[in-house]
Image 1 (tube, rainbow, N blue to C red):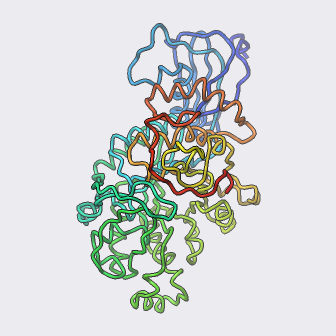
Image 2 (cartoon, rainbow, N blue to C red):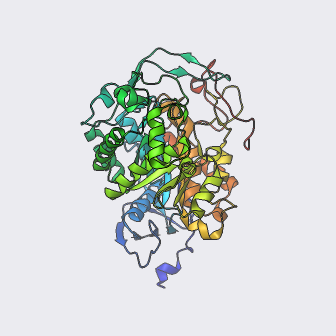
Image 3 (cartoon, one colour):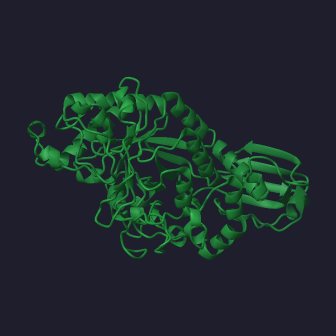
Length: 507
């Protein structure tokens, strides 16, 4: 230990998303010598880093390129909120506190789903959302590209998917307790070209974020069926769905439809280099198949006893195709109920933690994303001013208290949990300002949950850091987050009803 080293305080564990590095010692000008080395021997944890700041310079050791990126982000946090503005308005020298910072993430999958199918987000908005994810050291963007209400990915071989499926004649506004709503009559649409998506992927890669695309099959497919009616069970002409909820219109189970989607996923795999591609598999109504002679013949051919096994069979064909392309499938947890699921399929546990436990015990890798804990479109309070209140009440404190490893999970299955992801579904979030309000600052709390070990977290300390340091950063970034005390007047939606589920945080 050199004399200079002896002047440094002991290393401290820090928080990623909102952490202010409280390190004692003199402050030094930021314009000093800097050294960066990738050294996986001295920094063995993936994505980890160690920063040493002395009066003569800054030395950074990183486990890998991601660790180097996060180290740079940590230094940016140390410089204060002005470092997060788009242009330099800071007066005087930039200062850094002397000390040492050492950190690494708890989970490898630190994700957020962004639903661009229900309400399209223009490309510039996606870039901005990626920037905000990077600030919070989230590394997986699950991009929900298709649903009953819209198809957002160009597939040149099938142009009607975007010519027809990318727009709808209008949308529901809010939702009444009885499940109905007023219709706005305003056309809504948009899609990403192949080059747009390649640009989004490259932009995310520069920020060490992997874009995992989702094309949902065999349910949530009315936009595709509207584009090519022969994909549907009835063959009838349809419109892209203009209401929220689940459509009874599902894909048929013919060889031709399977081949159609093989070609779609071949294109998806060509655009997205991610090792994982989401195939959906959730919320598949069985009514049409149960009354379809063709579906019944297919069941007889396959020796299936129930239409409930058809979703698994359909997704299994796509999963096998992805495997041939060198990719793994990610599917929602309903797949566990629809027949044998290939071992390599990753299960997204959204209906509750128990399905993640079940999947892990069956040998599947798991991403924890229970709606009761991680759905950021759900309401943030029971106050009457809360805009379009839907779902469970999930406060900032609720999100911060979430633990991705369920208490019921045996220790042997814990390594199967890749991590967790938050969900931003956009039925009621029709523009980036509404996304800001729903996501922040709860996404900051979630980011800390998936980075830091539970024993190192304190809600009281988090809230203090949030108020003193991180909300000013969000202000500098132009994020229109929900204030702690409730929405600002222009963030409310007077007279627009929502559909709530339960009256407390545990219902």
